[in-house]
Length: 93
Image (cartoon, rainbow, N blue to C red; front, side, top):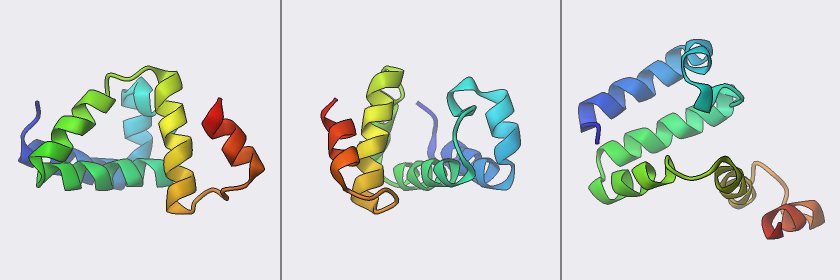
C-alpha cells in the first residue's frame, strides 16, 4: 500500500495535471476533471485515515461495472446527479 506522502503527492498531481493523469492511467481515461478532483480529495482523506485507505485499496480492485454502480450512487448522494426515477433505475440495475 502507498504511504501517506505518496497519496498526497498523487492527489496534488491529479489536480494540477488531469490530462496527464488520464493519458498515463487507463483507469482514469474517461474521468472528468470533477471526477478526478473528487478522487484526489478521497486520496487525501485516506492519507490521514488508515481505515479509509484500506477501503479505498479494496475498491480499486472492483470490476468496472461495480465501480460504475458505486459512482452512480455517490453522485446521487452527493447531489451532483438528481435522485429521480432514472437514478433509481440505474442504482437498481
